[in-house]
Amino acid sequence: MKKSPTFPFKSAAGRAAYHAAYQRMLSLWPARPEPIDVPTCVGSTHINVCGPHDGPPLFLLHGFNVSSTMWAANIGPLSQRFRTYAIDIIGDFGLSIPHWPINTVRSLMVWLTDLLDALGLAKAHVMGMSYGGWLAANFALHAPHRVDKLVLLAPGGTLLSINPIFLLQAVPIALWPNHYFTNYFFKWASVHRQIDDPTYHTLFNAMIDQAAIGERYFKRLLRTIIPKMSDTQLRHLTAPTLLLIGRQEVLYNPVRAIN
Image (cartoon, rainbow, N blue to C red; front, side):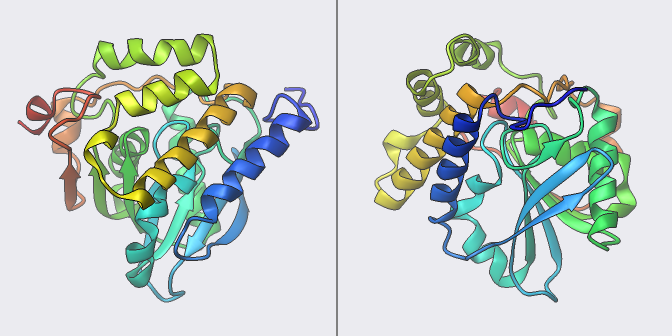
């Protein structure tokens, strides 16, 4: 695969704009992260590391198109106890740089295994939100001996297929990647109107700004389909698991997902 000097960005200006938005989001973290870039067989993986060196390792896998910076509201309390590894999922928006497009679930499983090996970790706790939750659940199924405990935050496509209305709401972003449609989608999918907290809105709007720039300037490299996990697969998840789904979740019907 022939790559431009700005890969995976479409232009140098786009790369600069995204890096600036990424750093703005990191500046809102209560804990100052240690950024590292870890080479793997799939590509270079960017990780924002926080917490005590002797703390239990915790992998944080973000939602689709928002990067590891989305953990701003959680990283403070989590990094007090855990050695947190907020990972930019390879192929998705962020600062990780894949060698090639990510087309299969197996590529992601190999990547996470290689990442644990490169960090010298026998196993880790794994927490994932939305797409990251689907990825975490699949990795726990693929390599149960590498996952200590599992936290799934409204995992996408894991318990139920994604709501077609959710997918339809995302179509304008794919067709016309700009701030207006990204802002509309994020706010449609959230409960932001019910939250009276200026800090929350500062974080949320910074995340939208970063995602909108990514939509405009990133090349689409994460091309895996998100299949629903079967009941048999779910029964084979052996890691102790905490599942959290909001009552107003729009990704799928939350009551059906829990039941």
